[in-house]
Length: 246
Image 1 (cartoon, helix red, strand yellow):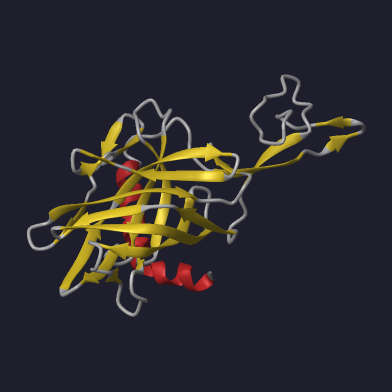
Image 2 (tube, rainbow, N blue to C red):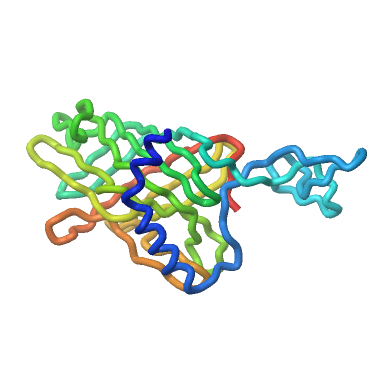
């Protein structure tokens, strides 16, 4: 997974520039990935803020058995999804399943790659990335960052920044290159983080995020020539179990 992190050198400057832009309005709360751990004891009394092992039930006396802690850097994870649909370059590609591999690198930042299998734009036209097997589409290395989807900072999302074009693949004689940045919604589940990238009316459902009350974006996926808008629809169960965002 160290190799994946090294691939992202191209996007470090972009992330820093984006951070400077978003910092113009301070957020009330900085997001982070966290996990729930056993609290320490003083004598016979626990000192944790939470009663339950998922760190959701606050202990009013701060005598809970559990405490929230940041996820350690270099913690790896894998994800999966059942169906992915990419619409770009005049073709709609449906992939039967997918897997993701990644690594947490900072409080709210991870690196990740997406691999979709069983991809075709029709019954007889398989689609694949360069050097991939027939029907396999792979993303470039991406950096993902937790963000807020609304000014009230009550909805958490995920911002995806590719090191190169997000996807490159061929369907028959047609080569398609999907560029740009992607925003999806984030949800904590018992299995771990769940990411949803959805479309509405032929466009990505989420195109902006917020830093305080300031809107940052819009961000879209597109193909050349003319930056024709492209879309990705997929739901990713993106473990590991026990990790949440807050």
